[in-house]
Length: 151
Image (tube, helix red, strand yellow):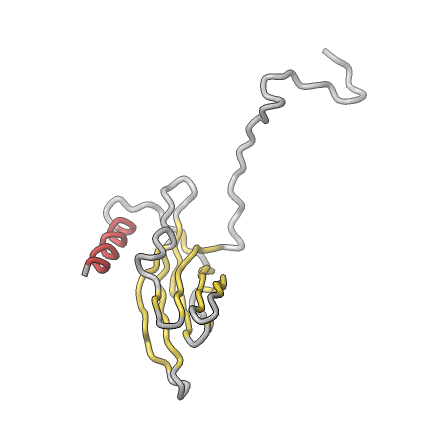
């Protein structure tokens, strides 16, 4: 009950009255833990497609982020099925995952854990880089370049 309340609270904060701009991304980023081998694997899945991790199939339906000027909030609505021994599929997870709170609503399976780590848009422009003076050059006058007269 407590987990459900926290999930609803987080969704309400994300999409509630004081909405921040949501950015839809074409790729969701995940991490998965194989509890048998102890190996953690990072993988990405295009929205609407599915990938198999062990005997679970992960399918993100959306992946939202906020602009870099906003408080980070990365969410994805994910469906996960378990592949049975007869190759049939059994739904075992359907809901929102939150990259900033991976323990809140991740898949906790007997053999595999899967959680959202982020979203990505390979076509998005890179964020603007601020340049700040380095400590060794801050406050010093600029040196003339070779071949330029000094003032």
